[in-house]
Image (cartoon, rainbow, N blue to C red):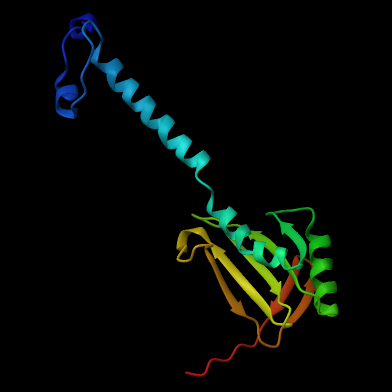
Length: 165
């Protein structure tokens, strides 16, 4: 029964516009097409810069300006203590710095960044590649009257932002 399909195109192949070679099983042509499509999708994902890289690029200008890179804490990262210590030290000294904290997302990658500018203004930068509306997927917000406390799980940042409209 299987060999009966060899040498003729199936209705599916004709509907999809898939041409088969003489003497070839039409199902093999479909499988070949699907395999090439899967390879193309994987290659696109591998070689297209990830949106996480765009968030890192947000900090490149600060890095080039001499800001201290306090580091990046991955989800469950063992380096949280050293990054937190750097943030607290630089904030107390008033020296420009930036740090990144990856967080668990449901359907996207998310992270929170902290950056103290040369003007002594602390910003909290939110990153979510699902709601990427800017070139770097970053949404900075100035933190007015920042208070940072060390907790068992990391740092707690409290801002008192007021908006006049």
